[in-house]
Length: 480
Ligand SMILES: Nc1ncnc2c1ncn2[C@@H]1O[C@H](COP(=O)(O)OP(=O)(O)OP(=O)(O)O)[C@@H](O)[C@H]1O
Image (cartoon, rainbow, N blue to C red; front, side, top):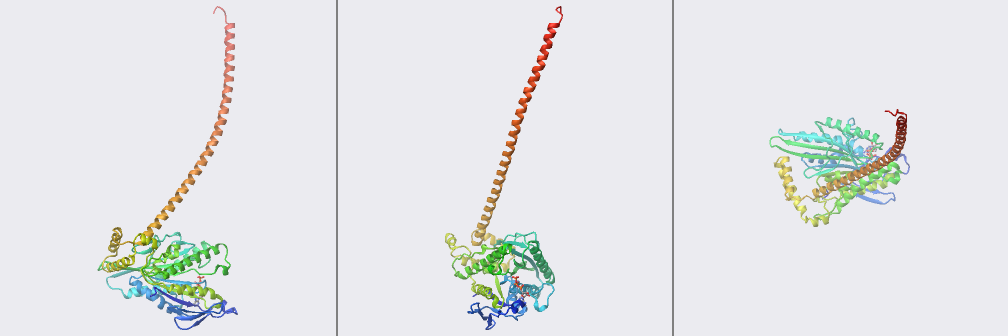
């Protein structure tokens, strides 16, 4: 069974595509799941996805098929992620946001405003007397391998960490508690506006960053002192494009390289996930990019994930469309089976061949406990299990190794800085020393000079005194 719901969406031909004579539509619909794609060499490829949204598809259809099941699950404490992928101008932002977050024709509203309304609706419907809920919202963007808080632009290098109980977390990121859809939309619109401010500040071309929207839903059962939480993450990826085709240079080229690197890391993670066999340890390179690290839970099987592959229907973009569709087809083969990121060598060394079972049983027990106990008690119990070595967590080992590596690198660089500082202080002291020596030399000379002068003077005075005294002796009366 596939873990990821993968859909393809074709936007209508743009006016530019329509104007160009040799532009034609490169897809032929078979049904709602299958179509034939014709590439630049007129070769046919048949693709099947969970759903195909053709040019005339409605935003509401995309939401209902792709996002609504995720919204409902999030309210039941199952995390979900929705990703839009595709070349620049293929309709990712249109699908995600619609033409506007605050003011927009109802039928054109994108996934984001619909998810907001869907979350509040589902929570209100399931609202019992003893349930209190809250929704928190964070927004970050990944630009040139840096994660920036869109609610606090000065927080521009957020680290990504992993918690045993909460999965991937972004320590220090601003979280806005939103009480109703209107408040949530206001916050989203502020974050989107900040994104534009940042783009201008950094002289960044539009949509050159990956934008990540995180909704955390917390429900507390006041009577039973229990709580549960779920997350919905929406990701509007930067456009995938062929650098050679755009003729990019300088900063734009660097941006494109960084985007392509993170998107190919995403492809590598998907490949690694699809190539692994159940029960066999397989290294998944989540740490290769900030994007894959943030999406680790979404891709690794701890979350329900939906991928919308946005495409142009025009034959002018056939090669980009083919690579988008291939990406989607590969993602479709990601299977659900317990995740373990340690490589084979490490597994053999740590004799954790039975990890999948341990992990499976552990998550089963913990999720049962979560239903009965207070979240904090479950966390404590889990910490205790890990401390006692009852539960072995390869993730935390990897995390420790990475933290150790970070610390070592930090120590090396601070030692290097200290060494440089010492060397420049030594240079300064050497300079001062030579200046002082020179001064000393000059002073010694002038002192010697003074000494000579003063001894001449003293000799003169004593000569005069001698002269006077002898004169006095000679001139004094003899009787005296
Ligand atoms: N399904 C659609 N129906 C009507 N118009 C669409 C649709 N999808 C996209 N468009 C239009 O196509 C243009 C490009 O779409 P959009 O900005 O969403 O692309 P994108 O993939 O987000 O590009 P980028 O990577 O540069 O952000 C926009 O003018 C948008 O309004």
